[in-house]
Image (cartoon, rainbow, N blue to C red):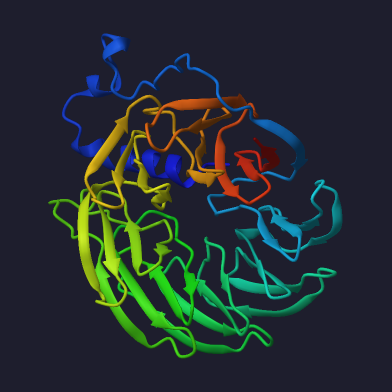
Length: 383
């Protein structure tokens, strides 16, 4: 399986070949001067122990969809690209399994249903209790991100930049919104977020959109960042991570662009800074932490919005997304390690090798956190 991040890096290299003036670009005379060399792990003072509770193995096939666990009614729901969907209990044992067509996106769960998308553009809604299919509807485009679910609606964002509102009970199309996609985009997509009676979504044109949940009416939108390059590659500003709603503020990040903070009441941007990231910002203990596309990390105070600590300790290690677990920053790398950082200082306080494969996704819950590696193994961990 090729992750979205590694897929992008490969695509950029291939697309850039014609503009490389010197073939020595591919060869470094001194390995120590190689700017792409992964940082070596440093010794640290261990303050927390990371423990593996259980591992559940799923089938891996080539895909770049966003496969991560979903949680609802005390159950864990997970799917793989081969089309297997499972309901797991807290010990990792399967309660039911369903086999569908090959899937293009991972699982969403809530309000009694489980929702996935297959490679033919079908949105499939299943009953949480037994895995029976409630309904299927084709949205005519690939869906790479999990849906958002409310009591009445299923909201889906397609890779073509269309946001679709479906009736949760019947699958009937209620509304749709289509953004204007740029000529060149990363093959990936961010999941929409439902907050109160509004839908928040980021798009490949570098904009944040806010919509009325019932009707899809556009309430307001704003630019996360603007294109400033002279080539299509330089103008890639895809927003492939969901926005973060925290109180009256919305935080949105994109690739080769900015981190931008929007005020919901004012319906406009109130602060921005340069950033290039595949992941949503992490808001934790009065800090905003950003894992950059080169796996460097930087932070800002959420009170003053002044820059705080930054770190190159994990640069070029292809970090996963970061999560907040018990006030610690947790993320993985491409060597199968899971790391814990103190958000106030940026210092490493814990580490564990959990897999021989790259860590792709981490999801935090109150009682533990869940790690998905490149081979679609699902790990349950705790501190």
